[in-house]
Length: 567
Ligand code: PAF
Image (cartoon, rainbow, N blue to C red; front, side, top):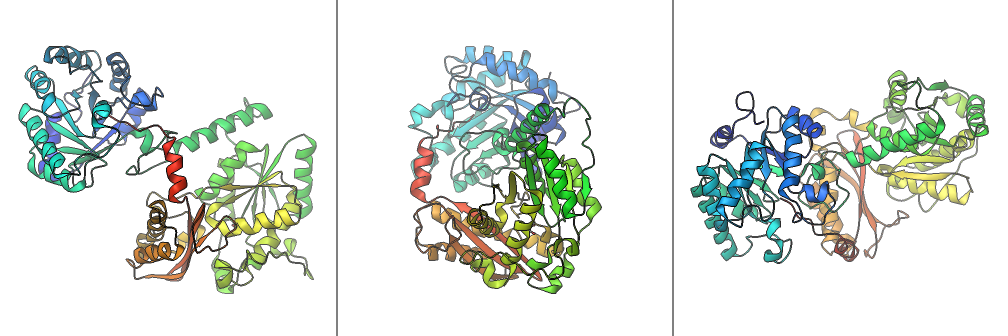
């Protein structure tokens, strides 16, 4: 039932506005998620009719019934103790008459445990709002893109772009406030219109795709947490990739059951530590004799969750997982960089344990490079561009050590991060040219919440440099947007990236390139490309890249997506 004393109360939300504190709202549909969001301090949990799409798999919110919202609202009310629970009134539960709206809203409060209801629509919704408010049911209004009215709106589109629409929105907002709504959701309306409404109203506005000026923000939790496999609107920021994590965990479980590892020991065991080439060979040969597939994640230690993602992927796809930890001297073009590359082997092994690694291969430099070693692997044409121009010999060292690791561990699959896209291209070229019987598996870049790609080198940034560093990703995103918007000239894309980078004078640009799948720079964008860049911040070199689809392909892709409606 609604919390009346220990939780947030609806009048508190008006105080938020008066005090300039932003209101946070997320959708919730079940008790467990509601509990977690409540514990995270989210102010308002909306049992949204978006559940029609993210829970029930419909293409719109229109099929959602009162019974469905009631069912989920009861669950959310069980999980949350602090947040205000608002239940969406589904399509046709408030339009027929004010009396019927009251009966339906009453059930959401009485049986569903909600503290308030949300109704879509402007002036037309006023009689229902007045009736509910008079009966003591707090109402949140909702104007702009109102998905239940999608057919009348003529599709899923932003509202308020013309002067007439903006004025109508303002009239709707005033009428709802006048009718007694305690708050108003503004969905997909231009920022300046949302700002004007927010200034005009005494009640707080809560925006979704309506810019930063609203008194609060709401997102569909499945979008924000990366749980919805369908189309995600552009304004959504993903705070996690729980969908990826969930698939990984399920794969891990399936692999454990199939390999007889579960049921059994619950805590992952310490990986076996191997320091010799012969020891490593024997271990993987034994695994293969037992019919187990072998996965290899080559690293230089200083492990972070980017490596964690490689291990997780490998854990889910192979039976015997080896992580190599070897700071390879031959791939450093500068001695000072090599000396500065320190690792903590114990911490790295512990991380490997947590990710269920079976063996850590940590040889010494003397074990890997016997005196007199003189054979190197090179992939000219891939390794001498981009980073290769600035780090002579680097990719020769990488290709050589990876060739050695593949020969020693003989994995079925080897995992590399897309963050080092050029390294990946060099390795793919080498594996193909030299017929290594291994599948190279690329794994998407893992980023901090502010966009900075995870890298062992991030540890070297000062506090101030760390604050500035996400500009690199923002700039690449600016380039990606240009491509998505139809720009096909690489020079123009690079200009857009540079313009954004110029925001941070502390950043020194080494290169920015638009490259094809083989990492070859292109002048004209005709297919999928990457924008790759290397910059310096103080004495730290950062590299990053983003994959980009040209506008036409992007359009063709999105045309097949269902329209995304939301509460
Ligand atoms: O990406 C790295 O950490 C290294 O370049 C690699 C692939 C382990 C080779 O030393």
